[in-house]
Amino acid sequence: MELESPLEPHRGRDTAPLAATPTPRYRMVVSDIDGTLLNSESEVTDAVRAAVAEARRAGVIFTLATGRRYATTEKILRELDLLPDGAPLDLDGLARDSRAAQALMSPPIVLQTGAVVVSADGHQLLFRDPIAHEDAKYVLRVLLSAGLQPILYEDRIPHQRLYTGPEEFDSPGARQYLSNNPHLVVRVPYDELIVEGDQLQIVVVDRREALEPVMPRLEFAHCRTLLSYSGALDSCFMEVFHKGCTKRRAVKRLAQHLGFGIEDTVCIGDNWNDIEMLAGAGCGVAVANAEPGVSPFARRITVSNDEDAVAVVLRDILAGREPGQANPAYGHGPVAAQIVAD
Figure 1 (spheres, helix red, strand yellow):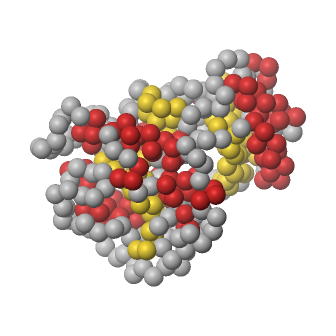
Figure 2 (cartoon, one colour):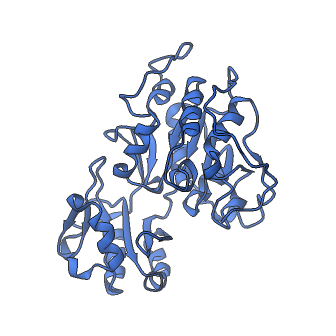
């Protein structure tokens, strides 16, 4: 659903070079993937690809903050030439051994709604924000008592396996979801699901009416839950994370790791797991197709993902302008109260 905004429609999808300023105001641009970077056909357009390349040549780090796992993010990284084996950049004037210069070449990425920050090739773990062991055991008891099939995401990147219970307890949505990556699925008895260590993320795929009653009970496990609908599965996803796990916290840690602050960062998004980073960034930008209720968390608003929103934002930054337009909906809601403190 598109939000009303005073923007003129973005008509061009050209890939002409951008007029870059020598020292862009923002050091890093962080984009969500689905509904933001990708258009409604799940494509990275030529205009977006060209704008990302030009921003990197101008010294702006471009990276991703997504709810996806590494296995479903790697293809996007390759399309944007962000992997270590991508085309080299001209880094004249930058210290080639600095973390910022390395991030221009191949930036760390935020995965699983902030649960982990890893190198672009997935082999180096920089930060993790897991569910504590005892809390995960409590979550599991709640889910099993409600007749729900839990899926535990292994604390290992990039080849992350999915641990779950016996197949006969799958919901139709869970069965379809797990069949998409059968080589990663490990079925074990429920008493062996959580043996040791912390859990990055616990997921249930089922009907909304089966999931909503258990969500309040999970708050006692110091967890946050996110509920979203998947049209492809005709089911809802309930994702369970550590209570403080957000994209904002992960982006802040990443910025500090690279030698600057979150105030030097532009974050672009469209969905409920983006709200903390939109509100907490130096400049939060909501795309015009953002979910209702998400837009008030962003200071700026731009065109939709089908109008090359990420390319438009990058062009604004490289031209020395604040990205997008002032968002008339900004602050019209309990924004501050919903930002999880670091």
